[in-house]
Image (cartoon, rainbow, N blue to C red):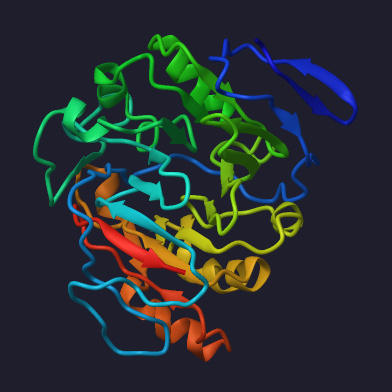
Length: 344
């Protein structure tokens, strides 16, 4: 069955041929981006990937406290939880507790990171390399979630090695890459469109994300991922902390935000706006928990790497929130390769 999406009351036929368990797609919210003032020149940071292993908690830091780490879950009392696994870069994975659904986001599983294979211009190298094969890492993953079409999100060397039967939910630019590489089920979501996965257990809605082209170009994607069961978790992800705030105000509240907490500039251009934008994002979405994206934690080489600068650290995030009156938000800092149970 080929489901339909609706934009401004006009039906649009999807191009992805879906397995019957991937239910209907709908457009719940749509409005063109209102912020056209920014332009992006290029990108120079990377992603990595999650690996599912023993359910062990490490590197937990709660907002308003100095440190809290060890073999225990991040504490909260709503009864909601998930297991989160991070790597350096944009890549992470989650297993939702209530449904058991697993997703893998912006995977970079093999080799180094370059753009258009020009390693003298830019090369990203992981500090922590995964163990095992690509098949080991993706074993049990229900679908991929890819936020952008550039290599630090849609990493071609990795995608070429993945099982092409693995469903992909992604931005339109990432959909072009995945279809070119032969993925059989590619669900392209524009801002305001949504789909359901895994027999309706999970719903995913796209929002307007980062602007990575000229000012007139379409923004990339952020996503709200929600378990459609009692005590299910809702999670928002966007890898640049670059939003159309008019659009994300439509989302309402979420349980978890996965976002960069570090700002990255390339020359004078603000590429990633984590340190500068995460407070306002938290005010709008009012999450119970923030999990900082480890997108600045790689080694960088090449010409562009010489002009990359950053502001802030993930360790500063609890203090930053507390100073802005949001000290009750739990901040859970992941450690690469270490699965982390997060109680919300």
